[in-house]
Amino acid sequence: MKDLKVCAVCMRSERGKIRENLEKTSFYVSKAAEAGAGVVCFPELSITGYTLRAPEYVYEDLGQGAVMDKLDRMAREHGVVILAGFVERSPKGKPFISQVAAGPRGLIGVHRKTHLSPPESAVYEAGQDVEVFPWEHAVFGIQLCYETHFPEISTVMALKGADVIFLPHASPRGGADEKIQSWLRHIPSRAFDNGLFVVACNQAGANREGLSFPAVAMAIGPDGRIIEIYTSEGEGLLLVDLKAGFLDEIRKHRMKYFLPHRRPELYGEISSLPPSQ
View 1 (cartoon, helix red, strand yellow):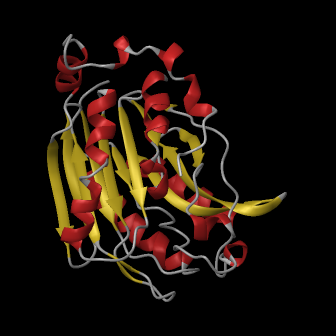
View 2: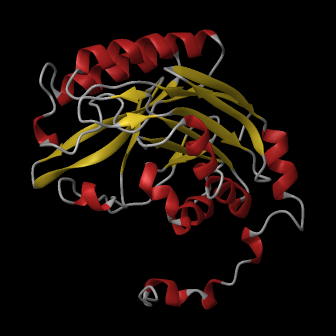
View 3: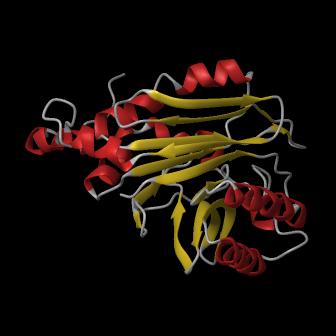
C-alpha cells in the first residue's frame, strides 16, 4: 500500500433521479479530487437511490449502460477511483445491489452484495463472490451495509490482500449519534481483527419511500481506533489520510497482527453448524 487520501461522501439519493444523482456525484468527485483524494466512496445505491419497490424499473431517465459510461469518464477525467452504488439489472431474474469501482484507467470491478437484509431478499438477488480489487495504491474490498455484520467477509478480504475495506451504507432510522454508536459496536473490530483500514459512509436525508438516513461517515485504523468521524444534518464528505507506514507498523508487530496466527483447521464448523436457537 502507498499513502492514500480517501473521501467518504454522505449524499441524498432519490429513487430513479439518475441524472440528478449523477450531477451530485460529479460535484463531490470534483471537490474530492481538488483536495487530493485518490478514492471517492459514495453510499450504497447512490446513483439509483435506495428502493425496495420494483427496483428493476429504477432507470426512469437514464439507462444503466449510460450511467456506467458517465462514471467511467468521470473517473478518467479527475484521475480518481469512484465507488458508486447502483441497482444492477440481471437477465436471469432479480437485480443485484452493486457497487462499481471505476478508475483512472477504466473499470476496476463490481461488487455485488452477498448478504441481503430480510426486506431486500424479497426483491434482490444475492451476489456469490467475495473479491478484492488490486489498484496501484492499495488493494481494497467493498462491503455493503448489512454485509458488515458478517465478520467472515472481512477476514476473507484480508486474506486475499486487502489493505482497505470500504463500507458504503444505506442505513436508515435514528439520528447521527445513534447511528455512530451502532457502527462503533462492530465496524472497528473489522479493522482491528484483520489489521487493515476501514472507511464507511451512509446516505443522507429522507427519500420518497419514507426512509431517513443520518449523514455519518467514519474511518478506522488497523489498530481498531477511530481516525475520524463525520456527522451532519445534510450532505457532506469526510476526507482522511490513510498512512502506509501505520499499516506496516501494525502488520510487523508480533502482538498486534493476528491473521498470521490463525488456525483455520479449527474453524470448519463455521460453514456447517446452524445458529443456536
